[in-house]
Amino acid sequence: NEYKSYLSYKKCEMADADRYNEETLHSRFRARMMEGAGFINYGISPVGVQKAASIKEANLNMVQWIVDRLGIKEDSSVLEIGSGKGDYLVEIAKRTGCKFIGIDIVKQYVQMSTDLAIKNEVHNRGQFYEAGFENVGSVCNAKNDYTHILCIGSFLYVHHIASQALKNIVSISNKTTKIFIFDFTRQKDWEECQNANKHLRLEHPLMTEGEIERVFEEAKLVLTDRVNLSSRVLPSLELYAEKAIIEDPTSELLTYPYMAKAFREAEIQYIGWTLMLQF
Image 1 (cartoon, rainbow, N blue to C red):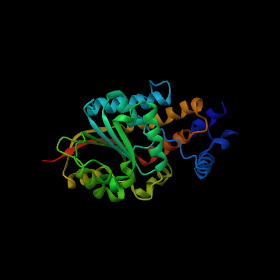
Image 2 (cartoon, rainbow, N blue to C red):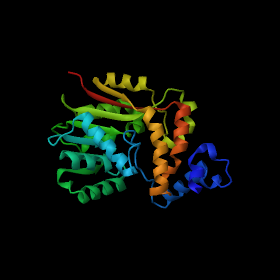
Image 3 (cartoon, helix red, strand yellow):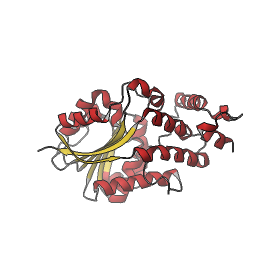
Image 4 (cartoon, rainbow, N blue to C red):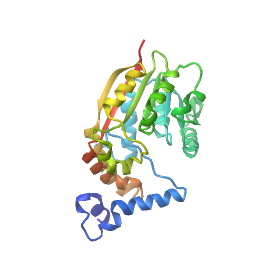
């Protein structure tokens, strides 16, 4: 009941709500980061959350949605840029038998991903490296034989260098490569999105959808599929928080209702683009 009093931001006037308000929670998580614990990054799964019995199941639903939508199969070769702790990529490899490469700029995440691949017995199909959009070519194979390149919730961190980031992606793609970018965009002026940015923690403006799609055109990328899951993301944030109360009442997920509120006010969109090279 104490946590439920926090859960809805409309009930924060309750006597004990200050123990679970936004600033108190963010202070707690900042302290955990300083201690080296890092944030718990579950990602955001806008598909199948309502029917999921747990956070893990919701993320697994998201994995299956990606596999089905992009047609990832056993003979696929998948690169994920910004693979985090490896949850999505390891599960994709586990379900499909595909080959994979995952890269992330956080050294700790690379090790955690490697351990997860070993635990799930898919380590013989791929590897994880410490790298990012800026130097993706330095760790990828010279054959450019990737069937899929995934950027799930990572591209927003390079919006300030979006043209160069896409140029680097194009350099390791071929005419059959599907590039999947799943990310946030804004509709309002950046100054009106600062409450939302407390959760995104960006040091540069988030791009609008029009700005992103112009960069796609400049990179000679053809849009083959687009899906807007914004209407599912915000309810899923609140459902994640409800599940976190039971599964992990100390996690960052408890800030998600505040994130949902800030995203609604700023009209933040969550869009997936599937792109291919123009020949």
